[in-house]
Amino acid sequence: MLSRLKALTNRLNAQKSTGSNTSHGKRISSKNSIKHGLNVKVDFKSSDTYASLKSLLVKQGCYPFEAADIATSLFNYRRVMDAYYESYIQPEEVDEFNWNMHLPGVHRALEEMSKDSEVTASETLSVLRVFARSQRDERRRGGPVFRRTVDCHKLIRYQRHSISRLSKAIRSE
Amino acid sequence: MNDLVKSLAPFLSSPKLLPGESESEFQASLEGLLSELENPSPLNIALVTQLNECLWWIKRHTVDKELLLHESMARILSDADNFIDDLLEKAELTVSDLRARGFKDAAKHLKIADELIHRQYQTMRHLQRSIDSVDFKSRLIKRMDLELADLKNKALTIDVKPS
Image (cartoon, rainbow over all chains, first blue to last red; front, side, top):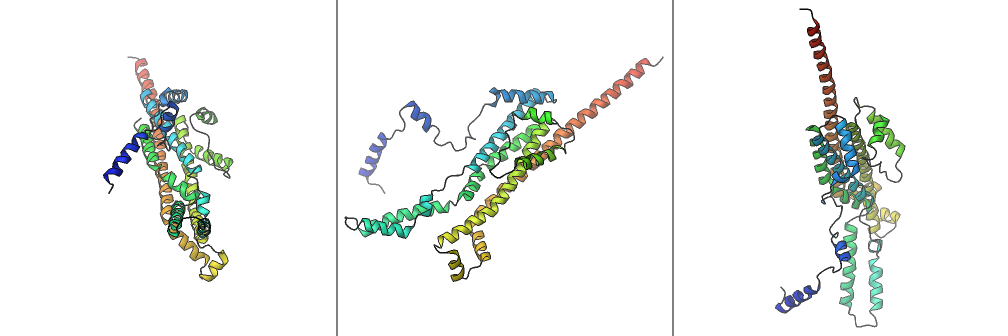
């Protein structure tokens, strides 16, 4: 439980953390939570390729509104599959330093460093625990194949949604 | 058929292959599927291209399942902080034991890879149904056209019959 004084201090300090001030900073921070961008609505209708595909489908015998629906669904499906490919080839990077860190060696180095200082053994151990936790977290996420499998899995609901939409658009034609 | 494929090129992103994957193999598989089409139309071709991509994803994820296992086995060995030979000797561990332990460790991720493969199969089923639907419609339209032409001819012959 936080003391009243601590809570007040936190609140006062929070006043200083108001995020980006400049328009450039705001533009960057607006993309902070964007991972794959598939939740962002895209207007395909303004693109030339969309219009060409639509006219190709109309020539094939679709009504214009059906052609528009099919073209939008196909573009949307492609967008999902492109994001799927990107997630596959660029998984979250493995932190090699953390992964390969030799903890007994780190422990020895910390003890050596704290010899002539006021740092106590328990403080050294708590620093070592931080290193160990960070290594454990890194290894738990696995190597590149583990990571890309998990990353792609996050997108399968988008694939499911986009393919059923495409299939529906075609079959209601 | 090639003209149709070319006309669709701007809408379908070019095959995104991984290093080591053969583009000619990808194209051969696509051409094989395209040759199965009875009535090639832009939409059918676009759908078959997506279907071919799904097949490739299934291949990739299947290879990944084996890689997951290898990665997991390598991690077990590196965690042991010892030479492989020593580890196998001291712990009386055979390579198949190691594989079994690797499988146990990677079980969760292997299940995820299976789900990814299953998703591609589901997507292929959607695409197949869509292709069938487009194919059936174009055949239906052709048949209706023929029947209409036949009816028109019959109507004309009635008109020109002497009274």
